[in-house]
Structure formats: C-alpha cells, structure tokens
Image (cartoon, rainbow, N blue to C red):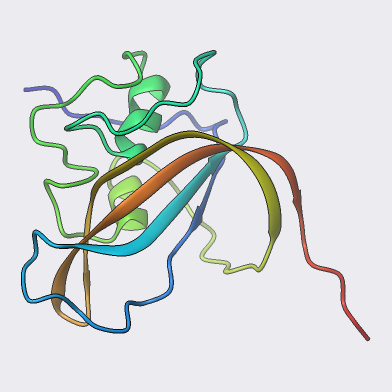
Length: 147
C-alpha cells in the first residue's frame, strides 16, 4: 500500500473550510451538505471536470500529482480523505505541507476540476463525512473595503 508523502514546495493550495453544520448527524456515514474547497495555483492536469471517483479525495488528487502519480490513483487507505477523521489541513501538513497559520478572506472565481464525498473530519468531537472540491482559480483577490 502506497501513501502520498511530501508536497511540492512550489505548489500553493488555498483551503476554504465550510460553515459548521446546523445539526450533526448521528451516523458518521451520513454526508453533511458542506464542502471543503481546495484551489491550486497550478494546473494539475489537462482533463475536463470529473465527478466522484471512489477512493480518491480532492487532497489525495493534489498529492498524487505532486508526487508523480496519476490524478485519481487511490492509495489503498485514503489517508487524506475517508481513511482519517483528522482535519483536512492537518492531513496536508502531515504529508509535508506548510502553513503560515494566517486566515484570510478572499474572493475567487474558479474552474471546478473535481468534486467528491470522500472527506471526513471531526467537528465538536463528532465524526463527520462531507464533500471536497478541487478547482483552479481564475481570479483571487481580497475583498474591497466598503468604507
């Protein structure tokens, strides 16, 4: 079983976390209607939009390309998605990603590349299953101040 190790130092990934769910399902297998958004500053492939590929979360797809694998290649355990309830940002840090810890509000226009329901994480000590979306930003900016 292969696991993704290390992310290319030149690959930037913006991660937008969904709003917390109003109600938390009783079952960790029930998907909440929320989506993590991952935008990369590099075009990872030349493919068209793809829908869910079982066993390959959006962070796994990014890690696959960064480590020279095919974009939708599973790792046998999906450690960056369904295989772990660790927060997705911590999953990326666990394979060599770095963050400056800065939270920013941005506006973005992006092209959707891939969406899946292969993501799990823990919120308020409850295991959740949710969606994740991989896209390419066409435009990214900080919102203008209205004053």
